[in-house]
Image 1: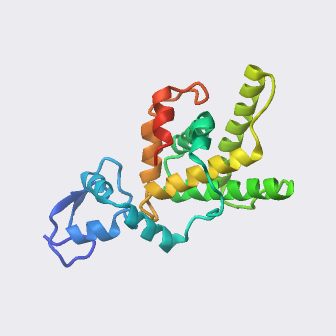
Image 2: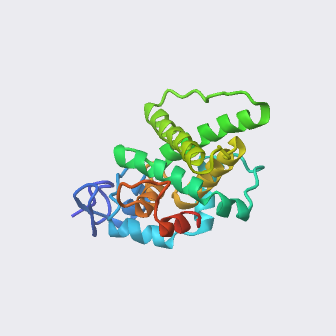
Length: 221
């Protein structure tokens, strides 16, 4: 029988996205483009395993390179603010769990918008929110901002003052943005970054008091 997508080539592999068999070429070309590939698809997993940093860079270039290349993130910062990065990562994972329709590009867009707002705040002391009509992106941004507030409250309770600076929040957001670009395939329906975050936080738990092993994994792209 012929592939139901191209109607030309012979169907050879089962595609859970269409609940039928398709040809290998359509699988490769339409994977995470027109096909909503489930995370447990063996062909999707195989493709992720064989993807390289070079292919990620090429995919990123096609979609537009992530901004903030001028912001340096020293390795020392990752150690000093590991809990902050863990908390923001948890917020992203929580957003993705609450809305299964979210793709990598949604998380990256929300991160980019928030980072631009914090960059404006750091450089000019002006509070400026990037306008977006996308309700999903607004929801992700709110989840992240809530985590920042909770983090500052936790600092206040434990050390008697809030030490977290806006410039540190900016660096954490940019780090996560780069981490996301390093994991996503760059395809419209990619959920590789979403799945990566889900693997770090398989259960609902407090991020600020999260397990040390999860914290150590999240800071390694």
